[in-house]
Image 1 (spheres, rainbow, N blue to C red):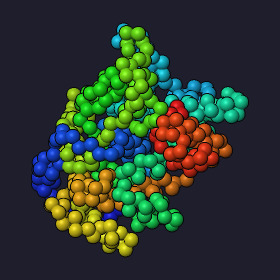
Image 2: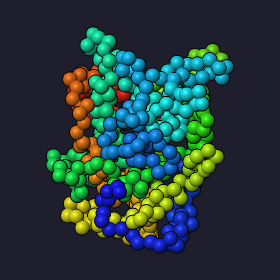
Image 3: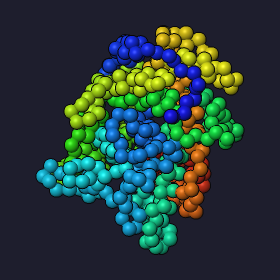
Length: 465
């Protein structure tokens, strides 16, 4: 049985559970209102990638036999049971995107079998076009690291393990210094990730995390569903595509005109429209506005509004379900249903270090006391955003996510030791420094010798790849 952060649980009979499920539309509404926040849209899918690595599937079949709390990109590299596919140099074998006339663009899709199924360790990473291309991005980034290691060593030996250790460590830095600060309440982030002595109320050296607790997997880390936009711009050719049309169902190969321009999803400094606008007739990239810099679209706010596309998501062949119903059932249809949100807040408020974060009068607003944990966390985020001008999660949601993610990031990996890591990181940051300098003016940035101090960001990796 999965571990829990809280021993207490909410006793509910089947009639009460069904009542909550039926009443979900009054708690979490379907609404396509524009409520963009200041978080780039790509971070929604970074969260999904994290979840697929450490959270077991509760919706669709997974070939992976067990999932632990090691954030080692096993959904991409495999776990020893469900393998990924590499060549003899340690590079990922990639697939090809297709033009409408049947010709192909090399290495722009996941490798697939003749039925269109992606040959990857966790099929959840092919649920939609965005997550599948994010999976592909990290495969391509790995292959770039293999190339860099070959240049450093002057050899073409298999660099799989070395490249993997570097990619995992880079991914960890992005999670810690780029993703989490955007999602977590700033005071909670400081408590867990900035102070010299790490705070934790549950996990410690004597009680390390092995699998993520169900308060995280079945409620708190499902906040990302509310960040999903109703439509996305994939590139300068596809400026508006509804989210419901991004789900992969029977896709053979990725269409070339659906190749993502990552500058549409993350802040990337050196991407211009003429780099990525695809003209299929000539099989080349061109733009009517060649000097227009690409700006990322923003994710939707974390709140109690779920876009219409998430009301009917594919969970099997010709089977669709409402994500709100899925998430409510996940927390309540357990042998011991999860605590409600207000119960969790009271449990956390009894911890001295957390009292000041959880005593706000904002918790007296609305009907928070009546909400199960998942909608409570969305409503808490909404209330704090509206009243404190913050973005991201509120304190309760932030504490649960931070308690788990800080423990996950502390786990020791055998693959982590790599003598070339600092050299590779310096190259990534130096390239980004030069790019930012050319766009912002050198006086706005530190001296070149200070680029090592930059925290890693997704934009750095996109530029480096």
